[in-house]
Image: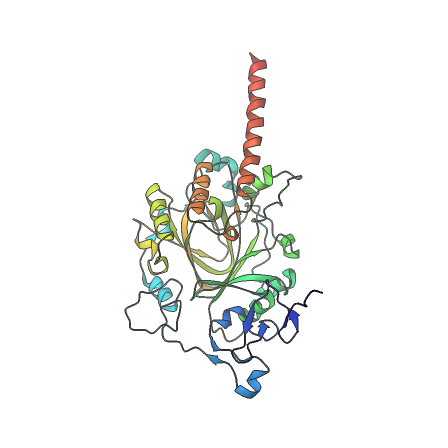
Length: 394
């Protein structure tokens, strides 16, 4: 006879690895955060946890005391000697007071209808492009009156999402409905950022049409076979919802993808660094260093460009550009990633770097090697076809 699995929580269910749980420091039973109203990101603030049964006798849980505003662990004793870490309140105010080279030095400003595969093939796609009017881009989005509550309506409040606690630069999972409650509430005890909501498989997908250039150049759109053994990668439609003060530290988009990015309302500030050989080497060293969060990468390079992206503006960032993003006011943005033919060498270089840095799969382009093989196969067939026609021509 098999022993029954132990049961936990007020719901008396067996352990489920996919759900966040917290242990009561008194009775030592384990509880699902969702059953006892404790969000995963709140758990780090609790010093001693009392479950609903134990707090009747022992009073409420004891919270940790905040001792600093410049460290990811804000309970560290503050003797003033520890450096400021990325994302913290002190870091954000220092960032806003720093001076940077103007983004206008590297940005190419264009009309929507001019941004075509043909234009990029002719001029290369090596500089970020800003489009102030989305007319002519082929981009379709909901109106700027579209709210975070509307996102919940279309995507469903039960969808589990990855949220970043910005002051700790740490990920946790929560239901979309809880995040919307936080976003629309009067009290925001923390700065939480949502940047990884891919909604291709939801009803919201119908409201968004990707810019023509991203669709026409996308490897996945052009070369991914319908009968592929692997599931098709969905990286084309992200909804980003950040509150004022959100910060994403310097990174290169996964697999060296290029990105389109549109601010529906609010504002984002991008800090852009070109992917020169020297900058990429510095970036890799910084990424693998132990004190990465204490070193502002923009200081390590010759020039870091500041680019303000206001409501209604679309930004296209080419392969390999190293960038950090500050949400300067509450903001909703849409974006997507795509691989293409124009920067293949750089795409591969970025992928190799991810491998050396042992980037977790969660943060890599899904089935990157498979798409490369599909593109190579297509190229081979094209070349064979060309050789045959040359042969016949002669």
